[in-house]
Length: 162
Ligand code: PNS
Image 1 (tube, protein in one colour):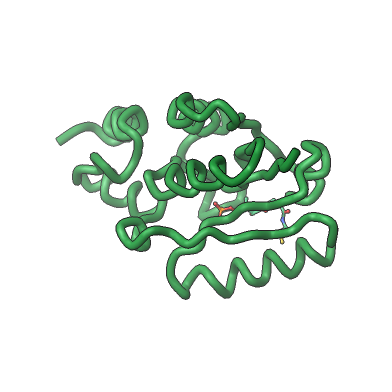
Image 2 (cartoon, rainbow, N blue to C red):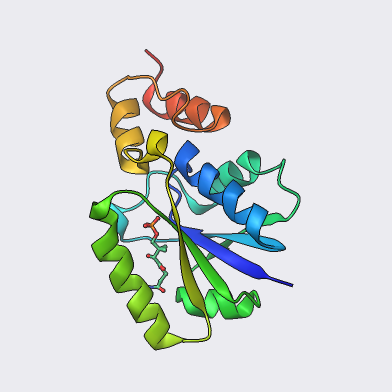
């Protein structure tokens, strides 16, 4: 049984995240999406943890081997608690590499039994980030296609549709 965790802040989940989750789910028997509380990230997440978990759950109902859980611990401890042997991360451009390289090295130092594996973003989503999506929505731009539909609706409710 190959079980992996796919961690992130998911503030909110984007179509790029979903593509990585779908591809990882196809490689593993079970995938647990770990939604990190991340209270300090960028001045604090826009959406609360319950909303962020619900957004991921709503986007992954078609994936029978995927479950979603919040966590507020070290990632390696979350992986161990979930009996997962792999951490799956998406990698976009070179700009992600430095930070991901550091996290993978530190996670290996903390628990070398958990392997970090990367899935490359497809070209369509190389540019996509939760921060960019929030900035577009904040200024009244359309985020349709960049995030799942229920997330686009939530962003429109938050910032007001144009
Ligand atoms: O979507 P993000 O914000 O890039 O995800 C970052 C995340 C949640 C994967 C990272 O912050 C994390 O692993 N947090 C858990 C705490 C932890 O283990 N920190 C040490 C990692 S070196």
